[in-house]
Length: 193
Figure 1 (tube, rainbow, N blue to C red):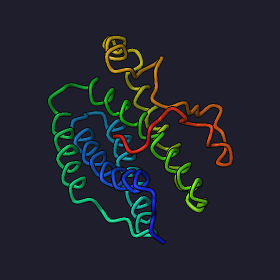
Figure 2: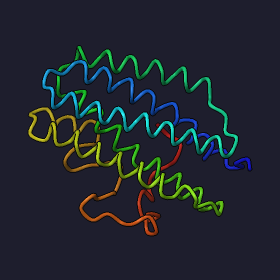
Figure 3: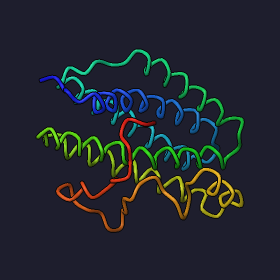
Figure 4: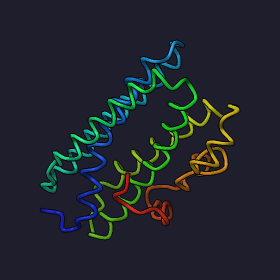
C-alpha cells in the first residue's frame, strides 16, 4: 500500500534523515565531553536516534516511501557541522540546543501517529508513541543538565525553550497511554524540522 498523504510522506522522510543528523551531532557532543558519565549518557541518546532511524525506515518501507536524497544530503551536513561545533561552543549550548531540538521531535512522532490513524492505520501506534516518549526523555535529560545555568533565562527568552517553555505538551510524570495520545501536540504542525 502506498501512502497518499504527502505531508505524512514528507514527515517520514524528514524524520528518517534528521535522526541520522541527530546521531552525528551526538557523536560530536560526546567526543567534546570529559566526564565519562556524561559521555555515556550522550552515547545512549545517540543509540536511541539510530534505533529511531531504523524504525522509521521500516515504516517507510511498508508504504514504499522513498528516502529523500536531498534530505539525506542536507541532514548529513547539518549533523556533521553540529557535531563539530560542540568542540567550539562550550558546554551549555550543545545541551541547550539538543534539548530544544528534542522538544520539537516529540510532536513529530505523535502527529505522525495521528495522521496514520486518520488513514485508518494504527499498527504503528506503539512504535511512534514510544519514539515520541523517548524524545521527551531526551528533552528532560538535556534540560536537567543546564537547569541552573546562568545563560538559561536569556536563551529561553530568545529561543522559546527551557524551564517554562517547551515545544510539546507531553508530561512524563502524568503520561497518557497510547489510546489517549491524540490529546498531545494539537498545536504542532507536522513536517517541520
